[in-house]
Structure formats: C-alpha cells, structure tokens
Image (cartoon, rainbow, N blue to C red; front, side, top):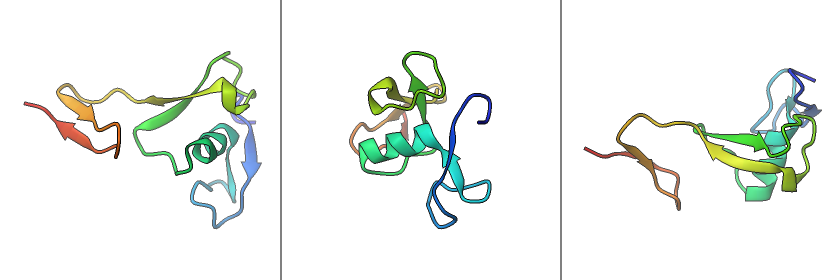
Length: 83
C-alpha cells in the first residue's frame, strides 16, 4: 500500500504500469469501467473515503481543476480555452 492506496501487479507492458510493473488498483478499476485509459486531468475519488475500497461502485471519476477559462469536452476530453 502507498498512502492507503492498493498497488497491484499489472506487468511492465501495461499502459498504467510504474514502480516495477505495479499500478494503483483504483485507477486500473476505473479505466476498466470506462473502457479506456485515464486522461492526465482525471483522477479517481473514493466515495466512502476508504482508499483501499476499490469496488467499481465506490469510485467516481473526477477532473482536476482546470485553469480559469478552460472547459473540457464531455465527449472527447479535449481542453479548450475560452476567452
């Protein structure tokens, strides 16, 4: 565990692998739920606050705060700057 987050072995070739082929389980679960890798501005929130509870129904996809005047396309995830 790392700060309460569960690490799982996914293999060195997995797109989310780091730390010798390990990845954070909550990020892997969310990527599988979405059917795509997480984008750089996305992170995973544990609804019940328990970082080791990585059931899909306990996880929410959340976007990091964007710079003022920026919006994210809900379909493609592209970031646009609004003047």
